Length: 360
Length: 161
Image (spheres, each protein chain N blue to C red):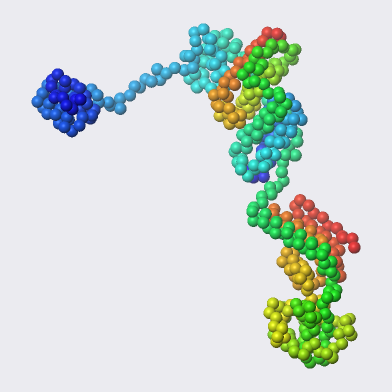
């Protein structure tokens, strides 16, 4: 509406207020400025008006504290609401200034002071003679923190243990140290010039070969199960087995057995030999047991050749893995007799230790 | 929270938790059970509760366990109306402590809880609000009402004596 009006001495106030507040469009603003130039007396009036609206924020009222009221000031003349302040006193909710005023009030008013004493009695005091006597039942001695990785490991070990136990029950021959019956046995033929291969037709994975050209003693064979083809080099002739050998006469004689490695070329009768053991060959479960003792129980070849496997080895494994969970190196120490039987068990940790002989 | 810190919390706070619960429910065996449950809960959360928050956690867990117990036993009473309308009958007291103990028993559950936490454990209004799940204003109101009730009870008992 103002924009369409002409600025005159009769209506200029409204334009000046909007001009001061910056509410005018550029055209009207120019009209106001022109009007002020044409009317110097009104310009003086406008300048005075502008100065009066200027706010100096540095100017402050310095006596605010005098205007403030404390809780004491809220107490009615008849002390009807005195309880609120007495409770505030008991609860230590009063400021220092309020406390000083409050104490003055108590000194000057015995009735209020008496009431305050009653409030002071409402502060409960615990009976320190009452204690919880079963603290030891609450305390813990360790924190089993199982990470996902540890849980996986426990699961794997458990599965391996179950598999092993199953195998043990399925094939009890594992406990035997004698030669497995299904393995064909051959003697060391000292005077035989050609190698002999005596595979039973259905046992191609249990082939045995004897190389009489390679003069290996029993001890050499026994102590070196990693003898390779280059050492034994069993170039087995096509016509083997030698028909001159009467297998029935060899049953009770000492034998050497070779376990073929992965590479097996039946056509050329060339065998790559990985492992040689004295007195027996491996069935699958025997191989698994051997790997178990080697990798899980950290037994050396000498140990798993000379010691018999028993249920205590599983217990040992369990103890070792439990120890790992708690960051400890626990182990069931087993002493063996000359025949490879356990004769003594020992365990030692911070929490438990024992040492006792095993009944045979 | 380490194992050591957990066991230290048993030494430092189990007495307080026990007294707090016992004063509320007045059943020693149940109070012990609640303490056991409380520390069992703490043990289950031992990885997540920090040592500086353990006291608050214990009292919060104990309080909620106690409330569950009270509700099961149907002993909870209406916060706003209970006890204040009762006719107070004073027995023979041997000392002021006995009077105040008796008066505390007459407090409504919520008022008793907040004033015990305040006086026994020295908790701030904020801490009590955190433990009980009440607002700070509610805590202040309950404490005020509890003190007024206790003061009136003591006053009337004094008159009887």
